[in-house]
Image 1 (cartoon, rainbow, N blue to C red):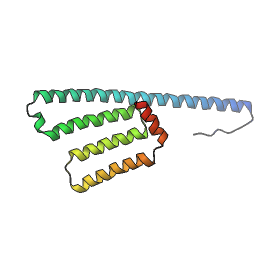
Image 2 (cartoon, rainbow, N blue to C red):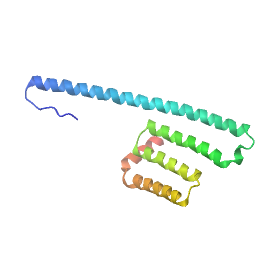
Image 3 (spheres, helix red, strand yellow):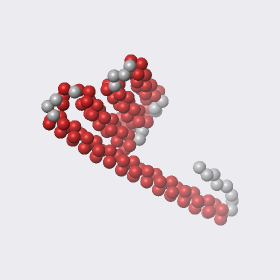
Length: 151
């Protein structure tokens, strides 16, 4: 933030006010532009997720052995869920939403991957850390506002 010199000169004050007003307009323009880009990305992502869900539903009912490969089904469906959480985060970027996206993504990894036990333990520790962050570092007022908006 630029600090303009303070003066009693009316001409200098007027010039400083015009400069500050111009800066606010430019900043407002870029904020609106970024918000529109976020909404466009969210719309494209929702469209892609709807197509993926349609393809998944088609495979469910057209393929006879679809339900026999549970890990394939879970992989595809949980990928769609993570995508939906990502869209929700784009539309309403709050610390709580960001933590939910991370929690869902890490949980998906734990459920689908059959890595070594140390990797699973690290993922569980990450989830516990995210819950601790939500509990101790996010203000209760933000969480209450979010809960009211969701109802």
